[in-house]
Image 1 (cartoon, rainbow, N blue to C red):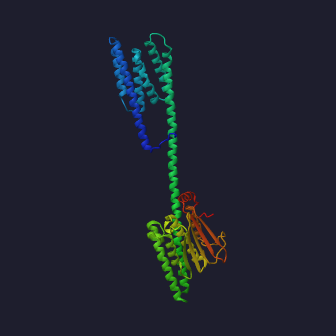
Image 2 (image 1 turned 120 degrees about the horizontal axis):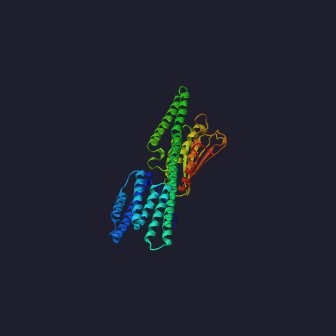
Image 3 (image 1 turned 90 degrees about the vertical axis):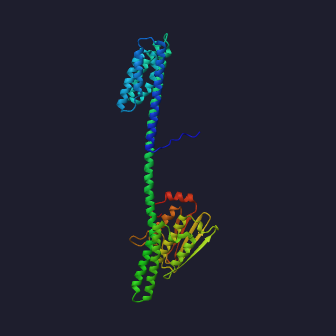
Length: 422
């Protein structure tokens, strides 16, 4: 049998449920007291109807019933009513011992209304009166009449105190759980905000920042050649204008849904890489794209997050090739396996020594964000980024992303902060 489960309710609903339980218990105790009172009064009337004590017994019974039916008030008022009921009950028990068992609801009421020590003292007095009343009713001495009331009172008191303390401990545990859950939710919101800011920084770097950097280089080249070679300068300006148009499309797409413009309208990753290669083939750089599909399903089946990350990787890599590599050719190669998508970006540029800080995107100032941001983006999907290069031998950048959603989710939850490349 599975262990019982504790259901955590919102604080308002829990308070309402506790108040409803309190009302039901109070009603039960009231009904029990009135039933015992009515039974004792009926017994006394039937057996002692001609007694001179009958008017007093009836009057005290009415006072007991009326006082017990009063509801509400402060804790002090409830203690006062309990005192009136206890005094009236003690008097009526001395007049008619058959009213002794009305003490059972009073024991529980005392435990609920009074402090523990005061309740224990009151219960002791009530129990002693019950013993005296039972001995007066008995024909002879019966040990059970002396032992039974104290044992019953002790059991009722012990069970009540145990349940009260257990309820207090459980309440404290629930409060701790609710507080921990709120702190966890706040932490998750903060982490989600930071992750989204990091993702957006990578998106902006790979699109707008890279485009602006290329435009700046082209416009500077145009300025240097404007008097000496106006036609070449105009070509640089036209290329810069084309890059500006692409950046504008990316900016609008980022504002619209933060997705790559190359994947808009249901375009698959293979087609987006082909279009990217065609757009990047200018200024003496020839870029081609290849797709090797070993699954037969095509690039269109890639999850949106995977396709977006690989396209951003290709965009950032080509921006680095244009700006730093001084390459003549570059190749984008997408390889689709059953459980893995691999993107290779190779160029025949000047190369560098990986890990020395002299590679693509490693210029001074605010630059150098490209490779760490790309690596962090891929790590969020469970992927890896490997850079293979040597001076004078070009560079090959390889991005691998698993196509298992479970692996992507686990890696996303444990990804290092953006920019912290291993």
